[in-house]
Image (tube, rainbow, N blue to C red; front, side):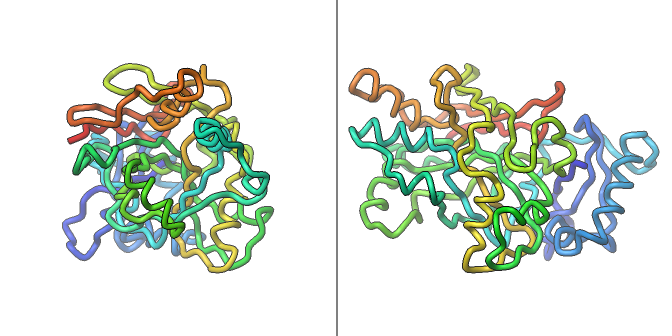
Length: 326
């Protein structure tokens, strides 16, 4: 099942109207407010709402819904614009290894045991075609292609082995980062704040069954395709996650429950082989430092275009993220 959100005429509905989207991303139908006011509302009542949404989805794909309409994904909001929480991990250790190696350091053994994670900006999540606001080129604007799970209510202390039952949906996002601010914030040893502005989300969320063949209950073994200014930048695959989605969610809920609509990200998708390219500028810069002793790839500048997509069976799974830096 595929879902998305469109702007609502109801100003109180900040997350937008929920829509069901056809498998080929071409058609959609608005969900009656009595069933679900928005995606968060649907997730809060998932056991009752999901079967009815699935029936709508099946009928939509069979062209049996009279009030369906042609969908332009550029009109979609982020699937959830005001999420109850947003936790972003670092599930790909090849990213950490490159960062350490570029500094002449080695990855600590503790990094193999406990995933790195920070609590990000969960309100005002941006749509897939929003411009990337560089604010100041000296901030070192960067993109990060990531996958994310969206949860139901997760009890505090849920184990990694049990978290799969609380994953309702998957999506993809661009974790926009100001890398030069990261440097100063890491020195405080108190975590990210200003270096992590609002992230941009793909227009579609999908249920796990839409990912048959690439979702094994732990990882998404599919390429994320990244272009910069129309040229291939990378296509790393999610199969090299060192921490599973279950382990990331368990880490996030270790000392607190997670409310329905929480987003848990994988961190930059990264592969050990440089031949797969990269999903962020900084990792390419790390590789350059390792190989040549200097970083030559610049940070984003006004006019740069970043496109992130994920194709499965010839169809964009989540809809593309396509943004221009300003």
